[in-house]
Image (cartoon, rainbow, N blue to C red; front, top):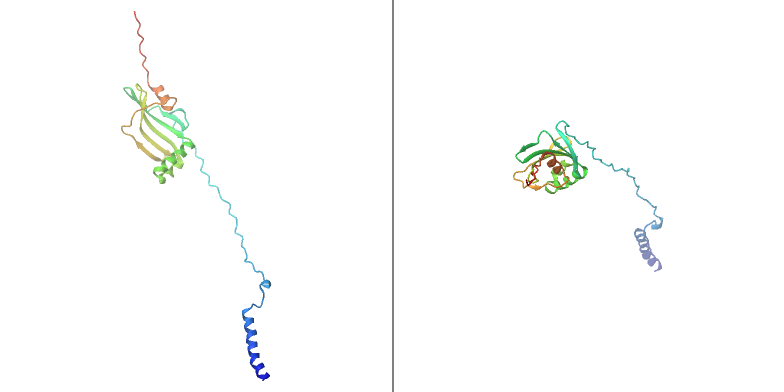
Length: 193
C-alpha cells in the first residue's frame, strides 16, 4: 500500500513543484539587471534676439520745409511755401518726425481699433498735418493728417470736415506758428488833446 500511495503522491508532488516554478520568477527582483533607458541629449538652441531695424528718420526737403522746433512727440517742420492766408485765418502744413515713444503710443492706439493695421505702425516715421489758425481768436483746427512709414508709404490718411475750433496751447508748435504768421494789430492809444 505504501507503493500505491507513493505512486499517487509522487505525481502530485511533481505537479506541485512544477506549478510553483511557473508562478515564481527564476530570478529574484533584487537580481534583475538594472537597465536604464538611454538618454539622448538634445542640442541646445540659443534664442536669437530679433532686433528692430534702426530707422533713420526721413527729414523733409530743406528747400520747402523750415525747422520749427522739437517737442515730446517729435521734431517739427513747417512748409514755408504752403502757408496761405484768407482774412484772419491762415492754413499751414507741418511735418513731424515722430519719436520712439510717440510711435509706441500710436501702435497701441491703432491696435485698439484695428490690430492688423497696427503692425504697419512699427515703421511709423512721420506725420504731415494741415491746420487752420484763427489769428484773431487764437484758435486752431486740424483739417487733414497723413501718417507715413519710413519708406514714404501712407499708413493712414484722415480728412476732417467741420472740426471744432480749439484754443492754441501755449509753448507748442501751433503757438510758434501763430506768432510767426499772425500779424497782431496794435490798438492805437487814445490821447486826449
